[in-house]
Image 1 (cartoon, rainbow, N blue to C red):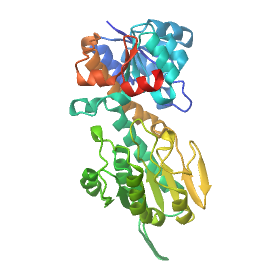
Image 2: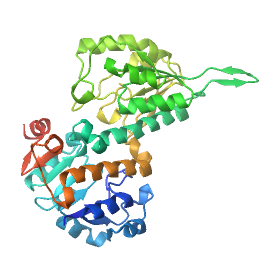
Image 3: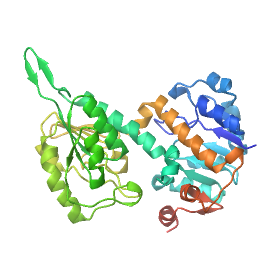
Length: 377
């Protein structure tokens, strides 16, 4: 029987939890011995008593260090700190987001301690791994919240309003990027009554945009990469995209940017000169701000006003809706554990596409090539 610990998150602003009372109950049924650090689910609305009722053991703060050092499996949301990495025993399995580009020292510690790290963002985007796809589940929540932020920050209505004093025209929203976050932002903005235009370098998403009521801005560039992600564009392609989309951006009341390229800084799609030409009082929500931002003027974790335009750089939007974000993430984690540990026995089949893709560290080495190159040169 594997001993599993659901960790309490320590990263600033992280309100999610990697295990809910429901998933803990399922894990116990699967054969795991489940512990959870006291208060781990509090910010998401899950009490210690709820976990106890589900059959899990609650670990006090005084016993936390011992629980980490004896656990066979530890689940987390945010990337581990170096202190957390050092607590794990050799051969333990860690499941969570890695954010390897900003947690290199933690990755080194995990490697040196022979910890197996299954990174949620490395799970291949294939059909049989959909239930484990935490990037998608959390991006959907982020896109929804970004649309609400745009509506609440904008200085006018989103929907068409017919009043005795006259008609108010609907807000015009431009969304850059039609991945999971972008599609959810489209759907939410349409439900709020806005007119939505969407730009993406992957022409195959045009039908999805149309199905949600958005107007696709045709950009004659093929930018589809592996796994359905956008690939990095050349400087010439990026300029061509900007010139086509520019007129829509400067005419918009709100712009929501979601464009990311795996392993690369976010592409700069909204430039200073575009912001200068936007209507004073309009809004930009930069969802890519943690990877450098799609807007050249956005600042991480801040709302700034530049040239009369409000530019919002929100951090960790899924954590602003911790109850549902945790429900979805915990199910993703449970599905991955069911795959890696059938019947609560750790079985790492490195020939399996999901297992091979997800393991960032294993057997005292960094297995993910880009991370290995960045950390070990």
